[in-house]
Length: 350
Image (cartoon, rainbow, N blue to C red):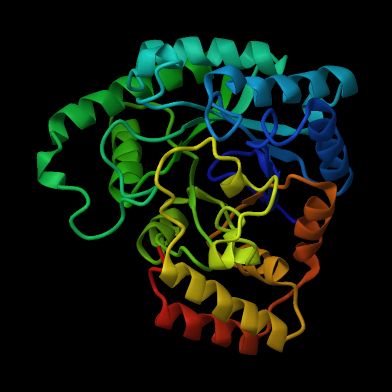
């Protein structure tokens, strides 16, 4: 296992991070503990969660994922062996602080709740799950989806400063070690950095966004910013919510798979005809080179020079073992050239 510093901090994280959002919905507490045990034995020391998990978001499962992690911490006594990352939810979910936007007050309350569920007295990386301002993720990344002229820049900056002050207070109190952003943009990350420097406050150490061979939305602009500003880039959904496996092609909905649960009523922006064509093309590359398609896709993320740690997730131990073992796969220049050709043919599959 490889390890890297998390941005400008001295926090050393494995280059594979275990995502946990299925725990409490698709996975039981016992299965969550089994995954953590195996990942820890394989050298993974980085675990990512959020106050809104399990996913798909539901009121009766909210907080279960953190609770399962907390019971593992209490049972094993390995708190100091692992790096725990969690997130405060943004506006929109009525059962979490009435769906209010992120604020100093919300951060303070959310940290206390997460500390209790995680059974710890500090959080290594505390992240803002999504910004208060409009952001081009979760299917809103096409031209015209967001009118940025409608955003009040001054108000956004004032909110960022207030949030920074709350996070700085949490760091100084020892409740969190560092903070990061998620589903954010080059402007958003740089604004946090700028205001942190101007007001001598804690600066963001990471940004967690969706990234995969299907969805390379953050190349090259956010990637450039992360490298030059030493902000850790943490890609999530490296298998595009499992769709890269091909299991959803031709409208298939395997029993137990996330797209088959029927819980999330929001439009599935990843389920497009173009995405299906791209998945088939990437599967052809894997077949050509004798590779497992999911391992090829994960190895692609693991090898990106701007990536600090890739967040994987699994609902079965078989999946988890395969995902982790992809770290031993090195994609050749020929394979990368083939992948690039498909990317040029289907630059924005969804």
